[in-house]
Amino acid sequence: MTAVAAPSVRTGILDCVQVNLAVLADRRHGPGRHLALGAKLRFRPRPGPDGLPTVDPPPEDQLREGAALVGLRPDAFARRVPADGLRALAERAPVVYAVADSYDMPWLPYAGRAHMEHSFLAGTHPDGAEVEDAYDNETAWGPARPGRWTYPWERLPTASFACALTPVPAHRAPRPELCLDDPAAYVEAYTAHPDRLAAARRLTAETWLLTRARHLHAAYREHLGERLDAAEHLRRWDRLTATAFIAQRRAERGRPVPGGLLPELASLLTADREVFAVRPHRPRPIRTTSQATEKP
Image: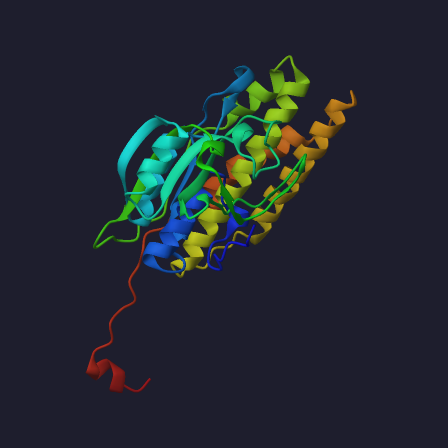
């Protein structure tokens, strides 16, 4: 294994579908382009596992929207791609972006332990497939760190989908946008769910996604030159994520979880509207030559 050289990619604020798209965005367009993945701050829950709502979007939708935000176009798109199909794609393109089940990815701590949709990059190598994954996270089975690995092609998982990503010319940076639904029904679903352990486990994943999305949105706004007063709000989201993890561990031991977790979640989701409000852009007045020479 060798470390991935991606100095401009902020892996700590990207999820497992975004992170490898981010690597390609910066390689194709230059440092900082990946931050445009945070242009749209969304809170649009949909039905999820265990009868609970989730903010985790379908990976294919996330890839297509994210690619458009950073100026990339999915080409040679295919679904249900086995390892030999990935090899055929990689022989025609510099690199293949793919999403598959983490359970079947030998380079991850999730291998043989947990099922989730996860992205990776695949290219050709004299010894087989060169896999690259910039995902960076602490897991229950040890750390997942960015790296490159070489495997025989048959060791690669069957991809849910795979594609090549081509730069879009004359791409314009997207404007920040908020799409925030009312959080009441979402919070109530977790409050009232009869399986408290299932709710605690799902909420750990939800707060992880919500927190990273808000850090990414703030980073993009700052990248555009905005002065966003969001530091304390983001610290509260970080604390909530840590509290949710502790709550899950307590629930797994049959112990009560912290009572303030869901009220704090509701408070933060409500505060998002004000903290991240997109205010009209007001151009600075242009001073004429006569104005510039006027004395006060």
